[in-house]
Length: 115
Length: 115
Image 1 (cartoon, rainbow over the protein chains, first blue to last red):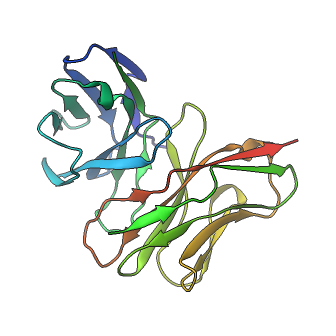
Image 2: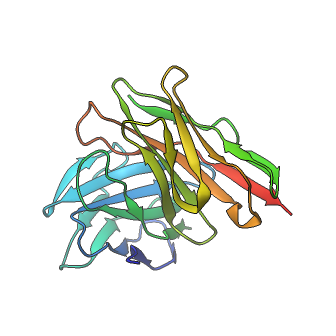
């Protein structure tokens, strides 16, 4: 069964450093998402991406964040200058279609720890 | 704006007993409702969804959920719990009247099935 994969599983970085979180969505999916979950809190939407551009983003997704699909398989989330409050589990997801009733398939997450 | 409430942080049930994980929602239009499960060190796995039609929805691993419009609820149920059902369960909603809105998640309920 096809799966969304994410690397690394755990990333530790110093405050102010740049990090890139990587995701490989399911191959025939066209819509990609990033979510995050701060420890003990809700899963929160960050951004959705389709046809090489951002479809929608939340207020969390400020200028420090960017997303890219550098090739036909990877989907990346970059945080330019990490802050302590960026420490969270980051989930990538993909869906075959954009319709609201399409379920999204999630990766296992990357745990980001900012020191 | 849409929202989801999962009133219980933790649900404990004995193996073989029925289980219920509660979820209530708030949307301005009609809801699309989803349940996801997260096992340790794994991503969110899709369990089931309600789009329209029959209020009782059946999903993976013997789970089902009942959509109740008057109570704005979408409780997850299983007639006979297994120890392997122990995991973190998330309810999520999208508003069908609001275009490509992000999934909005509840904070999750940890289910513990005791042998």
